[in-house]
Length: 346
Image 1 (cartoon, rainbow, N blue to C red):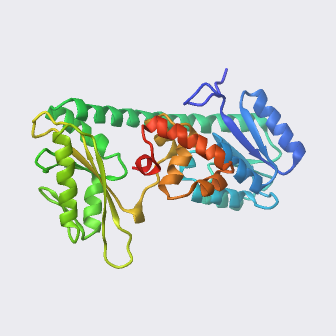
Image 2: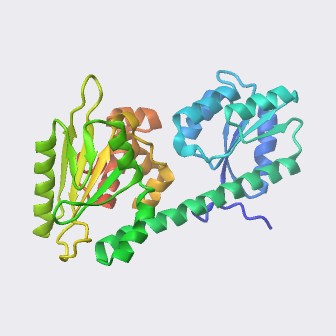
Image 3: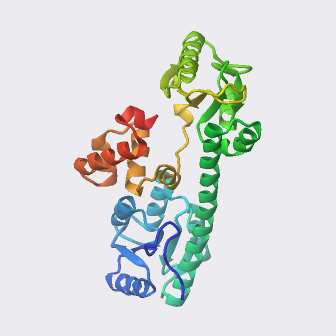
């Protein structure tokens, strides 16, 4: 018997069937339900986009020729605006059989193509194969998350250089620039993103220590305060903006003290996170949810806050009420042990 549950839970995989012909849509949904899938429906392209934004299905089965918004437009919208759904299989369902249509669909970003009249056995086999492929990808991601979390734990609890070296590979998985400073302010480690940011801007320099042109005094003051907090056993976060010439947006710097080091020169005392708002990477929703134990909706709201959206804008994007946004925010504060939106984003 084929198991159609998702990798992350015991719930059945959720399939969106977007098809404007009601009778065919009903038949497809019945076949999917009998095969053990959970199913949601959409009668046109705009309804399909709304359903996707509301519930984030595990697989999308979408007709090409639909009113209001065709399948190509649905696919482009999802691929352009929902990077968190990059690994969600998108399968076209259409009466068109011209090879050029298949090529156009795959170039747009479709994962597969089923031709009407629908062969239900082929459809179920295709869906099962695509979902298993996603499970393998997510399992690999979960292993990387576990490695990253263990590495960070080792950095805080073990002073051995062996533990630090083993952690550097995992630290390179972190999207923001990360620099670890020793108790004298010397650089112990900088990940690839930090080096790249230093190369891309004239304001930031990674040498024996971390320095910045124009804002060097403020940066040194921020780092000294973080080192002092670390020596006093405090865990404190300080924010700083580094100005850039012209109309370029400021670089963002967060200096986080790590509590009292044990005296070893290789024990990190401060971690500095560097972010370029012009090149900020979108953290995949599933990774954010796994790291902090968030629900998909909570992760989506956290990412929207990081983009600078207000509660009203988040409610409009996710098609929920502002009261629901406020409810999820309370849960986010509890799970991340924060009390303000600024602390949550940091």
